[in-house]
Each structure stands twice: as C-alpha cells, then as structure tokens.
Length: 231
Image 1 (cartoon, rainbow, N blue to C red):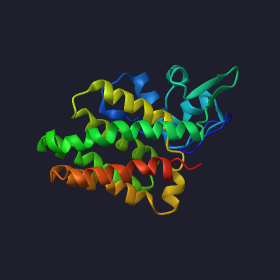
Image 2: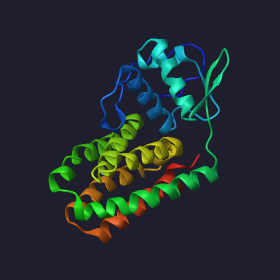
Image 3: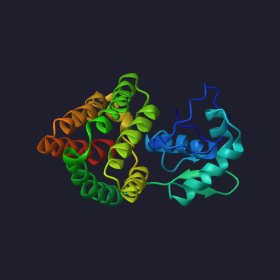
Image 4: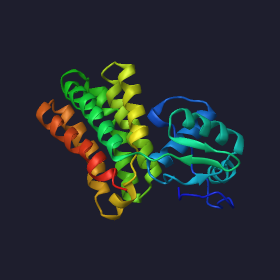
C-alpha cells in the first residue's frame, strides 16, 4: 500500500483486509488491522496526515469504518487526530525502539526456547504455512502481506505457551515498535533472508534443539532494531 496524503483518493485496487494474529474479528477490527499493517510496514509515514476518505478509497470501504478504526489507533497511541484534516501517524523515538525491543527479547526468547521442550509437533507444523507465506511475501515484495503473515506466525507461536496475556503484551509491543525499514531491507536484498528465518526457527523447534532456537530467535529479533527500525 503506497502512502497516501490527504487529497484525491487513490485509484489502485483495494487489497484484501488482513486479520492480524489469525483472530476472528468484526469488519471494523479488520479495517483497523489493515491500517495497522500498513503503519507497521512503514507505508503510513510518521508525521504524515491521512484523511479517512483517502484511506477508505485505498481499502475499498466507506469512510465510516476507517474513521472508527483510526480512533481505535488513537487510543493505542499509533496516530493522533488532526482537527478538520484527519490523522497524523505518531513517531517512535530511538529510545522507545530500544526499550520495546529489549522487552520483546526478555519475553519472546525464553518463551520460544521453552517451546522446544513443550510444544507438540502438530501445533508447530500448523505454523509452517504462515512461515511459507512470509517467504512468499518477501519474494513478491508485498510488505502488507509480509506484516500480516509475520504477525500471525509470531503470535501463533507464542500462543502455544498457553499465556494469553503474554501474547497480548507482545502484540502491543509489535504494533508500537513498527517496521519502518522494511522497504529499505527489501531493496537491500535482505528481506528474504529474514523471512526464511521463520522456517529455520520451526526446523530448530521440531528438532528440539534449544541452542539453535535461542540463536535464531536472538538473530531474528536483532533485525527489529538493527535493520527494520532504520528510518
């Protein structure tokens, strides 16, 4: 989804609305998910103002669910309202990015390492289609599809630990940290390597190789700050 400023609606074909995390949701929530995916991927830019009609035209929906969804994102601190104009995407500071990434590492690495001992084979293999979707999205350069599949994979993996609050916390951190540098990563030819780490992680988990799981997770999360967070 190319970034749109306030003004004339885009005539591009509307993308399918994603369902982040694989959850069942209302239409308004699906619109919010689509907007989050575009924001997380860096296709809605910090500091830019976007009108509800412009975004509605891009997604092929009416302005009302977009406006309602954007108000949800305001509550999450992802955008601010701009009277009579629309919504401005909030910026994330370097310090905030460091803090979000540090918290994610503290939560996700030990949790996923433990899954090498506790997760059953069937549940792990059920995540492989999402991992393949991430790779395919990287190959095709579809950043919105990449973010949707990546979110579904990681939150689905963490859900195997049986702690719903943990999944909620990490989901919130993922939204807030965003992935501003996905485009640059793709242009540098490094997005596919990062995408393939999801399959590498599943292989390590099914092999019950805790050392390999820790190494892949540490490397993978390092991309969030070292590569994807680059502006």
